[in-house]
Image (cartoon, rainbow, N blue to C red; front, top):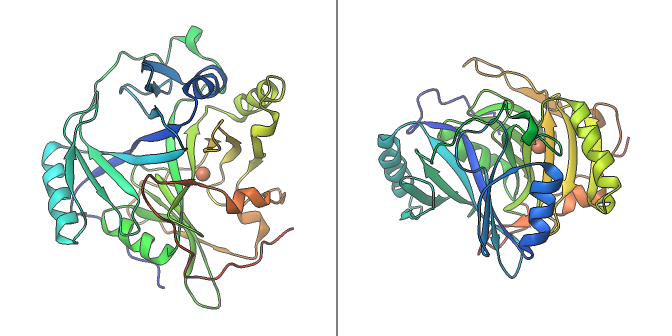
Length: 326
Ligand SMILES: [Fe+2]
């Protein structure tokens, strides 16, 4: 399909991605991974849940871990600009026959829950409890010294449809790959907050979450994390990288949490805030789109992802292109 034109005056105003809820099967093991190893700060915890934020975040949490029987993702959370945006969002999703409900979430103001047209659970809020800044409390920094949540990346069975859906609510396309034969999108990267993406979509068995990314200050922190993980029992959790992406130009590392949820550590992409910013098209056959230095991703990276709670994934409508090994 043709790349959609940006919607500069969307039906409601999304500021940025905000947080994610993971269901995990062993809260203690997840605490050791996310807090002790990656370095997220615990802001509350009990026997059933852990709330965490990254170092420069002034809101209560960017990750919620919930104890459960099987790993899954509860929802993707987004912050809206102001209270009237919640009603506008409710009206918008209702008018598209999508389910809407108001849900109670600890540490948050009014929260609207809906789903996208493939079933990805989405939650929108305006306010979350504010906490004192800790970005200059250097004694608290550990692990990869994560500064903030950066983006979600999802498998979708129809990248054209997902791109249109999120484009219509104000996400702006920054980079994409397109199948040359059919003209259909293979993957797309879309933002609200002025970086390369708040959310991205890749063709595949979905919807499923491919990964959640956290921003680190520089690549050396990622190297430090590799040294720590490889000597503390997490060697098998290092999946891909470190490397530099072609798409986004970011430096990256992919690791897996104790339940297999994929986490990216990401740094140094570029600013995209200009409204006329042109999206960059990549050739699907170009191995440098994924890793600028040419190293191929492992098969698990193409195939494995986290299911969303109660959502049955479907086969992609666009047939898989063979993996290009450089
Ligand atoms: Fe990513």
